[in-house]
Image (cartoon, rainbow, N blue to C red; front, side):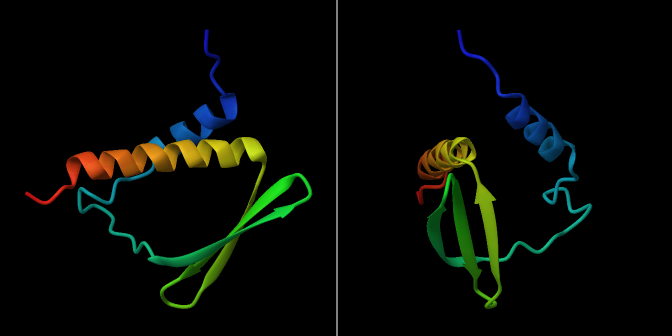
Length: 87
């Protein structure tokens, strides 16, 4: 029997409560990531993302969060391959 991660559920609930940009209600700019670096710092993993406009942002995460991110990215990539193929 699988158990649910309360922290992941809290984050998903927060994300789902945010206004959608698809309805045109609130347009937000999403910067394009150009490159990234992953570093291991002790028990944490640091993801450094460089954006097209030159800005950089760093995220520190535990191994558990990194595994979740990997799984969510894999699902998103499979969805993109399935639903966004040119006809």
